[in-house]
Length: 266
Ligand SMILES: NC(=O)c1ccc[n+]([C@@H]2O[C@H](COP(=O)([O-])OP(=O)(O)OC[C@H]3O[C@@H](n4cnc5c(N)ncnc54)[C@H](O)[C@@H]3O)[C@@H](O)[C@H]2O)c1
Image 1 (cartoon, rainbow, N blue to C red):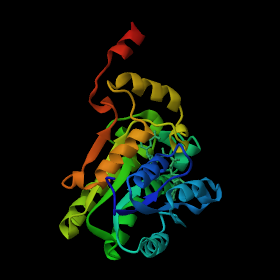
Image 2: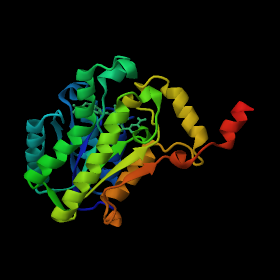
Image 3: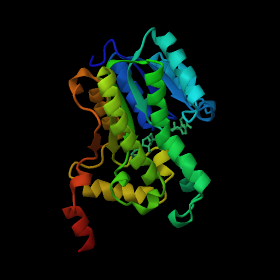
């Protein structure tokens, strides 16, 4: 029971394929108690209720681009959990440009703002409100999900690349601040391509998933494996890890080329 006695807030569980869904299941297995949150529109799909029952967790609707929604989310969560929180998962991303297949050279700038707000600034908002409302216990751990397109170009990823760079930067800046404040830590996990609703929305995703699988000496990291890694990061075993972008990708980010890929070209 690595998280016995720990309390948290988990965002972004849409259906059983969501990374956040797996994280919630594992947190429950490890003895944590937590609330679940998603955008009101996603909640209307109803799937998240199953997860709530399974994990004995209250579900609280919040659009994470809204400071007011986040304030309510924290107020409700602290009441429900009977105290401050030890961990927060930010597992939220969306790009209208990607959804509506706008080319990178023809971005709609209102939609770009939306991409950045939903996928990155929402993490700043969660941390800023948490700081102001004193929501975080000492040594708390906040984790957001990122992707290697923050460092390297993947043309199909479009403006989500900018969002991930910003997200990782926010984790660094806020990690410093919260570390000084009460030893809280903030990190991002740069996860392998994973077959989920958000993942599959990216064009050419399946080909890229297969390519990454062949490039990575350990193969792609699955959502279940990502959940295991989150448990470690929420636990006291990772107390001095903060302000990091942690690659959880089977070795993809450090590999130039693999024999499997060479074979495909010979
Ligand atoms: N799937 C992949 O290949 C992959 C790889 C690396 C990183 N990630 C990241 O993992 C995270 C989770 O994505 P996923 O792959 O599990 O897909 P997913 O579609 O299951 O999860 C995305 C979630 O974001 C929520 N969301 C969107 N707008 C919101 C808003 N305004 N307020 C609150 N919630 C909102 C959606 O309702 C959904 O639950 C994202 O940050 C994604 O970029 C995914």
